[in-house]
Amino acid sequence: MMKRRSALFGVFTLMIGFAFGQKKGPTNPEATEIYKPVPPRVIPGQNGAPPSDAIILFDGSNFDQWITTADSTAVKWHLNKDGSMTVGNKTGNIQTKQNFGSMQLHLEWKSPQKVLNKGQQRANSGVFIQKRYEVQVLDNNDNPTYVNGQVGALYKQGIPLAMASSPTGEWNAYDIIFHAPEFSRGGNIVKPATITILHNGVLIQDHFEIEGTIEYIGWPKYEAHGKAPLMLQDHRDNSRVSFRNIWVRELK
Ligand code: MG
Image (tube, rainbow, N blue to C red; front, side, top):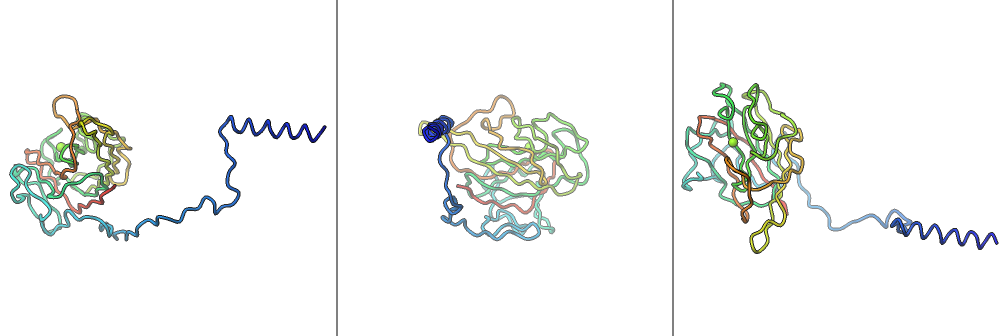
């Protein structure tokens, strides 16, 4: 009688387990250990240097990787002795010669020490990923503006989770993980782009789903595109923002 009862109980617990989707698990640790494929070795950079597999876009020595966006001519920004570059006075946006899809991007920027103007006119620049999706660069210290256009905003779309700027005139770092949008053969959006940003190590965009191309006036919308350059903005108001140490790791 006891045997039959326990057998019935066993069947009952099995049914309950099945109903709740439980599977009989492995009974040894080796069963859940994976050995292949082995991740590639990447040597991390020391003291802010790029990792070993990064594409170096700007190391302070030249503009070889860049052109002026408007006419594809040589860059007219200032190349500084300290390994940085500074936006020229109305010398236009610059962009990489190379096109990029999904990426890990690192760059550093700073506003000029001398404070000029206010609001969106104070040290405004921007990091345009794929020439379409702007991560705002702005001196926001004691300088409020609309929050979806403040420093670290995905311009006019993504309000940053925090304002993590260095003091005016000091270097900031952006570490960006961007996943490019995917389109159908017919050109419709299938998977929107996403972006994660650390500003000076602080998470300010957390896998934000980009709504489409940045629009100054009107709503964002997607247009089908492939890989595209990285562009840095000349806001054309003497903003004089500087950049340095720009590198990319392409993501699949
Ligand atoms: Mg801007």
